[in-house]
Length: 137
Image (cartoon, rainbow, N blue to C red):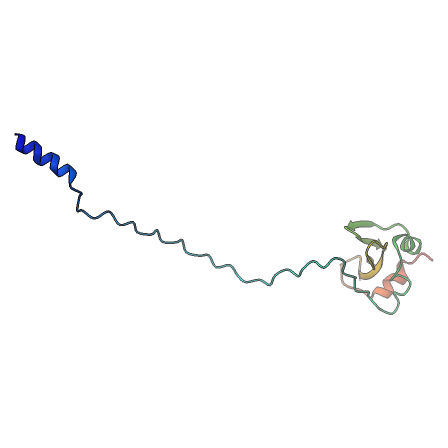
């Protein structure tokens, strides 16, 4: 019995020759394909607006909101958007949207662009004709 105890205790001191379990790397999840997009343009601060130049709009383009109200009366809509504004004037013949933007940083917004459509069905109409039809004076 003592020989059996000695063998068992001796076996406990001998290192095991069995190989350690191999750690296999976990496969990476499949990468999702993200469509390439162009990066947003860098913010460069103030960007001056483009000014619409059309015959018949000379009395509108460049006016501030107060000047447009003197010309057309109270706007149906007044929509401020940051430092810009949209004014909408309406009458039976047409709807006139006037967009006002500052021409330089900190300046008051003035009319730089217009759009006109028929009040009945929204079809585009001549802007200068709409200005003449809605003009109060």
